[in-house]
Length: 285
View 1 (tube, rainbow, N blue to C red):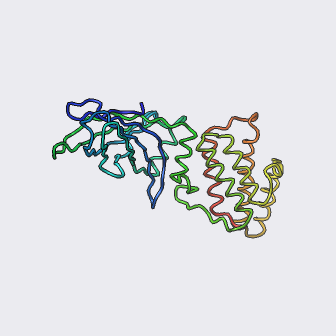
View 2: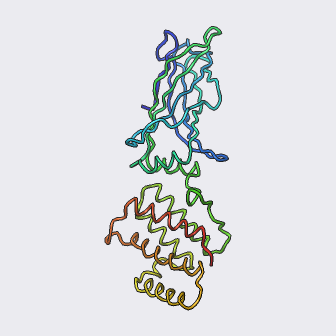
View 3: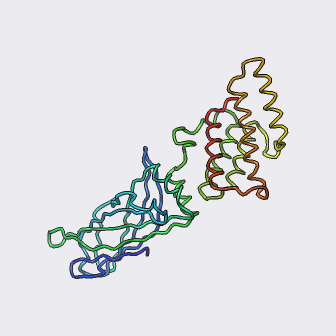
């Protein structure tokens, strides 16, 4: 449930908590999940009493990888309801690491489910007393989760250790990088075939072509043989070798345009995404 009740002393259900929305944010080396909660006063005993909430965030539905994520804190404390039936909003924040999001993405099958396990204290007659708080259940559908990941700038890095390349290298490179970023978005949406389709567009754009301009297996084989012959006569550096890698990856990604040939799986999409990312990072032309 996306609601929980707060018990204060002998007053059960004194405050109602409703989870309204979830957002993501990013900062200097940190990402956050932000849970917006509305509190409403349902008993006079809760009025004018400062409330402090905290707790733990748990990820669910991830098989053996389900479990504790991070401590939850309130962004602005305390929370105070000034009268019966009064409402106010506050934000529960959890810092998350890039690796934790990687684990989530490796194991989730659709959207995401979180459990917010809350505890708290209240100021009563000048003394701090523990209050009873239930759990808030939070289910995020797949499209909303993809938006949250984008808000946290997850996968802004093409590879775990590589910064995104400079788009100013050339107009062709900028187009190729735009297609690659679209591939990342499709991957987050678990659209494996569309991930490959965007990657094949990216690989073609690197050399100023459209994806359908290169589709002949013989062209790939001939180019590889020609380069091998050339390497026997003279030194062949990285750029021409990288072009052969581009051709081979383009040939692999072409399956994204032909679902009748073979089903595209998550492993296919992920491995091709990484390989194309590495190629983009070192591309020289």
